[in-house]
Amino acid sequence: MKDKSFIEESFPVREVSEISAKEKNIRHGHISTIHIWWTRKPLGSSRATSYAALIPAPKDVVEWDKIRQFIIELSKWENSLDHNTIEKARKYILNANSGKPLRVLDPFSGGGSIPLEALRLGCEVHAVEYNPVAVLILKCTLEYPQKYGRTIKKEIKDDFLEKEVEINHLLEDVKRWGEWVLESAKKEIGKFYPADEDGSIPVGYYWMRTIPCQNPVCGADIPLTANWWLAKKDNKKVSLYPYVEGKKVKFKIVGTGYEKIPANFNPEKGTVSRAVAVCPVCGGVVDDDTTRKLFQQEKAGERLIAVVLHNPKTTGKRYRIATEKDMEVFKEAEKYLEEKRAKLMEEWGIDPVPDEPLKRVPVTFGVINVWVYGMNTWGDLFNSRQKLALITFTEKVRMAYQKMIEEGYDKDYAKAVVSYLGLVLNRLADKNANLVVYNVVGEKIEHVFGRQALPMTWDYIELNVFSGGNGDWQAHHDWILNVLSHLSQIPPVEVEDGGDGDENER
Image (cartoon, rainbow, N blue to C red; front, side, top):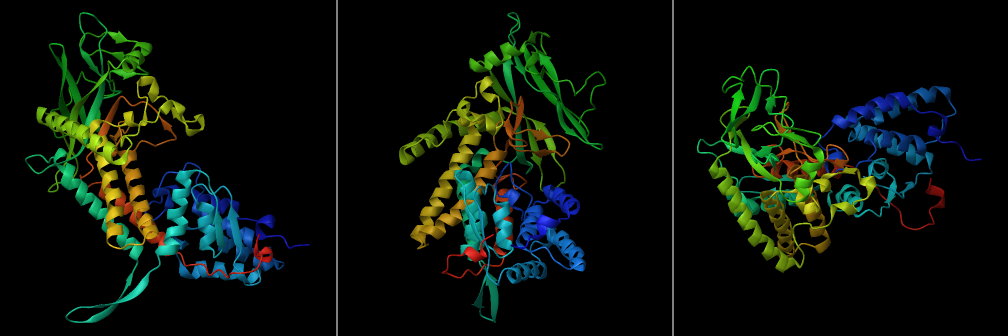
């Protein structure tokens, strides 16, 4: 009878669970930042359970505690690239299995945690998936770093000395072409995100959706928001303050660093709750069914209310009310979008703005109720400037591939490079849609998929994709480079050809 594996007899469940729970706070280099995957397993527990399943249960009682303690250490993120720890695990697995690398098959690989950790442990890994998104994630996680991401030593000569440096060509090319994409896009559409005269850079543009008041003697546009906060910290509280002139709602900014928040004004009380809206002009109430019908009948709109700013010479964020100039620039971007969209449609043979219907998304995807508010296609999840930014970056990524081919790059290698650029673009889209909320406690731009759903948002923040801050192209590019750097440091697995492999499969 075959000996039982360690995991069949024992496993430090509590300790590994506690370590794995902390992993959600780990970002730099972690594969969770390469692309969202809802059911991705923690790397620590995947590594620990894989190891425990690939070694036999010891017969010596003293060995039990040693192995359990080693598994606990192995599961820690800080040991994921520790040479001594990983090599010790690899040798133990090899020695326990006649010195041959085991073959591990994951038929439902998903986000790649289990095959990645089996690879880290020195196994010959076979990952299978039918979801095309998961296939892309797996290629960028497992295949490309191992195939193209090996660090090589190269002699560098200059006028003064000769030295040996280590180069990761895949990492360098993803960095180089990501920067090329950024500069090319900025050269074309950077003018639609102008800095203020004092040098302050717009971080984001704060929009509110609007519906017409249904009181026939009013008819004002109701700006929809659950509250008026822009910043809500212990030491900084800034709010929009709505006031009425005629039948128009106007705004000014009050709070820390601005005019004092009026004593009779409650920033917590907005104009809409559960789709029931209250007009700030006449006090009329619009019921939830009517609110939804107004959106479906395309009678709703949106209004640019404020601009979030950062000045490189100071710390923290500042706010100002949006001006006519801000809207003029947006309308210019809107006009350019029409030209750009028509040009790319002719070149590509498809609409560069996704027009697939949202209603056909499977229920398993999560809660999607935005189509109830007239958002019927994926393209409806972005305003005009957001669409322009995303199709421009998409075009530049495609152009980067063509330029690589012109420079003599191998086609498969060039495909690997642009795959990572595609992941940067995906992260940017998650941060640059009209469902993105502004985190008033952290004063930061969140992203669409805070959970597995597409819920309606009454107000949203539009990202400046060239802001130089968290959330723009450069920031997402850096995240992908961090992950690729980590994955490239996993030692390669030497696999012998030949044999049916029955003895070294588990």
